[in-house]
Image 1 (cartoon, rainbow, N blue to C red):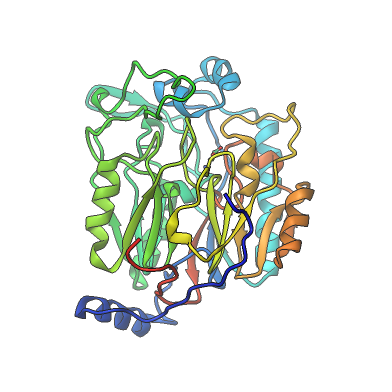
Image 2 (tube, rainbow, N blue to C red):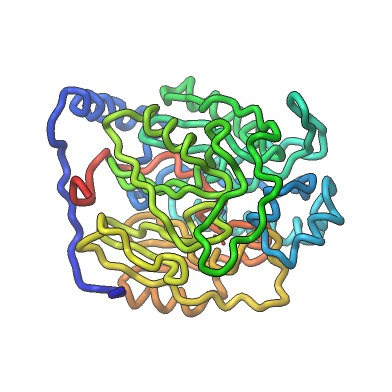
Length: 389
Ligand code: DAV
């Protein structure tokens, strides 16, 4: 694979054919400056963002889905602490970093919104199961913004069944001010959704996921937006049924491309493949063994290896969370303050890194991309890749 090859951004703009597409375009331009929700990609200038909260973060009840996704050395911690709060000192340190992040965003001229945390220790359930919650730290997982539409995701984890509750006051407000608001079919989360026999794939064995095709489920973080093209992966929380639901829901205006990566514990695409700007792709070369053909002509940057020390507690993610950055526009990018190799690489590639402490927040399973939902970016619906691949 050729990394960082020379290339050019393909910015075709405009649309090929069809009344439906023209209508969608007109609707968006009519609401420009009015609709509070407008976000088509990962890099248009950021105007408004939701930043999660870590207050009340709780270990979920133990479940097979954790075995397929969590770092294996943490599984005993999940077993022992099932249904209990995360250590308060860990929450306090993560919270302090979140406040620093909010301060930086506001300093860069971005309007920041926060959810209202819910009590994660309350028990709830559906026919045949009960659960307690997880956290409201990662809006990226639970809500998908496509243009002026906010979609509540059908999350596969029982501990996240009410994962959008903390964001409801904001969803209602955005709806009242003109956004589209929808929700995928509420999953039943019966035992049939889970493969209770799941074990780690042996070396060289193709990936198999802990969820079945019983009903549509997906986390928004398994999708990356690139204008009319949306890149996705199947994972331990996102099944084919869920991807198909989204494809039909969005209709012909969008194309969803599903990629396969080398990630036996896949959950969320944004520590594997991310988009930095039109024509600029950041990959985790350990997982992206071949760059998908649709990125022909793009600059492909390989993420520097993470340098997080082994004794730093990482409950819910691999260290590759270091590439989970947030673009404020095509140049400015929020990066973890201690991640010197990433900072140097980004400067070298022509970006402007903005540094923020976030390692203690990272312990909860996400970084700047996960912790945010870019509700409004200044821009419109365009195409950035070659057609038909
Ligand atoms: O290592 O790919 C990413 C989790 C992002 N929510 C990983 C975990």
